[in-house]
Length: 321
Ligand SMILES: [Zn+2]
Image (cartoon, rainbow, N blue to C red; front, side, top):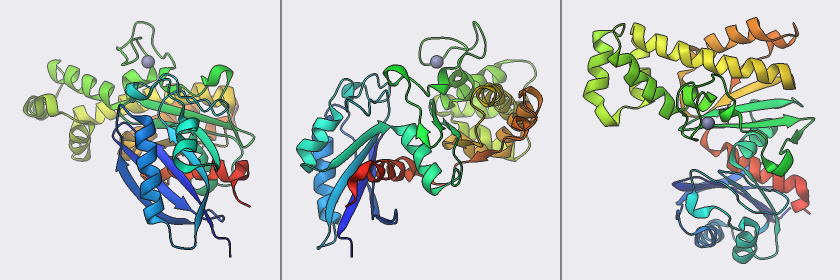
């Protein structure tokens, strides 16, 4: 019996999700520890200690795959710009893994790239060779896989799908620019638009009252709850989100021609309210007739996708004997 296990971990702004995975990709255990927003080395040390405690007696760790939000270089092991983890910017992730876990195989990757790789191996992208993933969360992340390989591009800058410009001088984006996909489809942008609709003339009384009552606590979930009850303003808002997503997806399909396009993240839970209008845009704006039918599907793996993908990346880099 193979006595080794792989650690796949995903560092987010508030927590590190990890999975212990065997050589066949079966998940042995999963868990979560808090992220110290100022201390990458300390956080990875605590991860190593926690994982050691979780390790069944006769097993040892053969490799560590670490996914992290931000611009991650798989070649150098360094983290560059990372808006969700500013205290981790310019840190040496590979060095921190070596210090905490010793001499094991290791791989680092951007979190959405890792999630995409997880979906490719174990989830919504199984059996495909060309995939695009868009993660609709607080921000909008992206990843591209071509011929089974993640596209990282020059200086690891590829995959920033959230900052495709859809509208010159459009809505403000958290990145400082205007009109990016994230400004329309990230939860910050959706909540901003929800308030804008409430201030306008066309909103339902119910919508305006809800936005007023929730005040600063307004979330996309509140908006979704009214959409489920068929409130016309809520439905219009999600249709708008879907069309903006469809604008980006159509361009991506025209450029990359993936087998499938995977949509994940919290906002994706709105399902067909967003994906319906998105698919209509794809049918109308994609050039190739085959591409017009590109399946736009929901991610399958849930919050541990990036941890699972990071484990697969390190396994395929040769971590298992
Ligand atoms: Zn932007």
